[in-house]
Length: 122
Image (tube, rainbow, N blue to C red):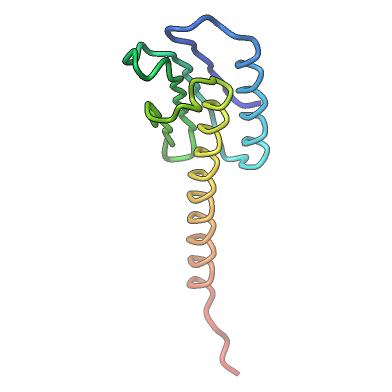
């Protein structure tokens, strides 16, 4: 797999979470081979006591010419007390964003190719 960097902040390292991140990163790079690198930061910041501890997962995907960042704080999402759900949700959001970028680039290339090809008159 291309460059993958995983960091844990305010939480103990978890082999299970790391494995999940590696699996999801591998899956997304197999779909979109233009990804040049991935950085994942998993954190369990100190939140207000009435909401409990909500996991925070931020992802950065390197693409040619740009970086896609997923940094949503889901402080109101109780399901994100489970780190595994937070990781899965972050990768789902990332995959949707990267798909949109990929489709837009593909569409622009197709349009540019059609514009460059002159029509032949009969």
